[in-house]
Length: 188
Image (cartoon, rainbow, N blue to C red):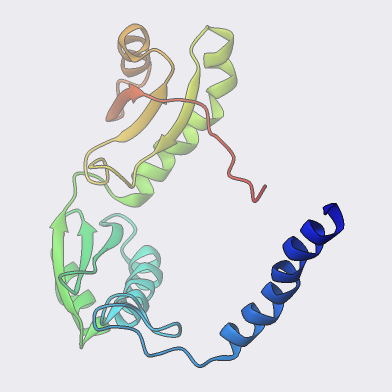
């Protein structure tokens, strides 16, 4: 009885790889409308917007470093957003570089060069802050609403540390908020 049960259980398992191979060899129907094809961008015009963003990033960071902040994409709207400190001539010089895509210029309080300098300054002080009992988990300026107004400093205890940090960097626009240690993503 045990042998018969083992054979009855193993026969379907032996047939499973053959069934999977046959299923994968069967041609798949085209994707439904609104879903991406394997070699196609998810958003219509995404590739063009990404190329335009790279063009603006390369040109503006070299030639307009005191005005240029960053680029971002409104993929559903099909719009390239160019963040910059309002500066005479900037918009007129950038617009012809990206003909064929919709561009919107967004006012920024600070240039990317300024924000990068602040980032490097705080990053260089992380060990000093740690010795003083302040744990800085991350720094960024291009995300979650901070792109145009401040360098975001994420700390363990913002209620305790915010005044200390903003006073120390009084010449910089700093947003202090709650953060946590980075969690590495692994394939396992």
